[in-house]
Length: 477
Image 1 (cartoon, helix red, strand yellow):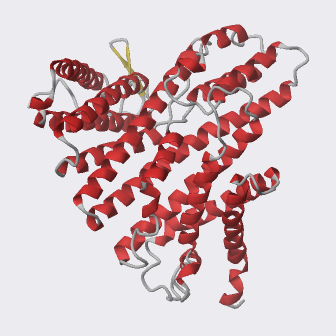
Image 2 (image 1 turned 135 degrees about the vertical axis):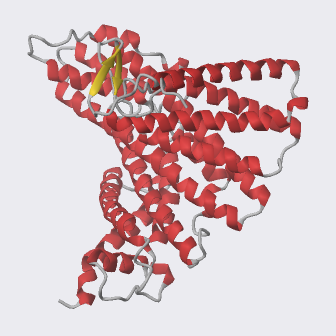
Image 3 (image 1 turned 120 degrees about the vertical axis):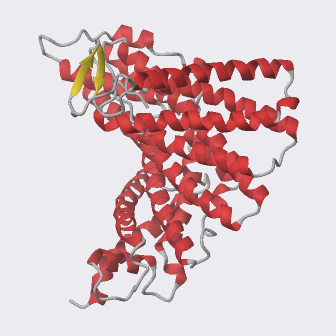
């Protein structure tokens, strides 16, 4: 078969992505009559296409830039080169540019859902649509992050200019809203319901109490962060089980929609953090000091917003599940990536001279310091080294180290502005420092229980201590 005849399937994949780029704006336009089911199916198909492209970009994009026309390349490299436009003289054919445009339009389509966290009437169809759109955002961000690295290394196609507008004021507000919509309480509800279904008819099953679950669920008005309506839907979902005439099978399908939505949010947060760190690194080389510091401050704010949302919702999730005798293993991937971006943003911003007045800067830093402490306190409670699985122990330690390192960066910045703090701010500052110091001490103390050479979990002095780290705290020197 001629090589030129092998691009038909690839061209169909690209055409599918392009069709979605054209279709999404129509779904957000009230004057356009577009079938919602068609948009959802089209978006779902595009997610599959982007999954293929993302896999190719992760494995081949960075290495296929050398000798693009070489016949000795692996087949995946040849396919990636074709999709990247390396074998074409038309720059507009670059799939990464299409992915960047799809990111812009998907972000706007997601925000156009106009969800109200106090409106319990939002349908599962809308939640499912949001799930698909957020999943599509994750895939496009993965592609353009790797593409940005490639263009910076090869100094081609304008470097990161094709995505710089995604960090302007408008898009940053949209990112912040999406990152604040994490709802692990919905995951608690779906986990509880899955357990409920699994226990049906078993003599040794837990005592599943619908009333107890609903009682432990917090009122949405008491939540500090947006939950995209999932809280109200979860309570309705569980309450429906108390009615004999309810469509139970339908309820569990809706439960699966909630579960998928939570997973999509976690995946999106991790992809966004990685993408943002790549672009931030590129901006350092191409932008002025004020622009760089402004971007770093915005990224730090978004990270704190997301960590606050994640930590609060996961705390609620643990509380709900524990009331039913259950526990949910926390996913560390999005938290770990967000903590890495937070530390990078704060460290980079501290290198430059302040673009704000000293008084304003002091207030901003103190506010960030307080939010960081609240999130750190919750995350430390959720990520106990001794109770983490072996595969998560390194991630747990990394999360703790980055959170405390971020706190130290803010402390260093606030110390430079010590003469700008009033008495009230000084008291608050010292209280937060003492709280973080206690967390640091507790973190170090927890490590002494994790010893030994084997990969087996051990019990030392009645304390569960999975053997992972080899440092012996009793050794000298």
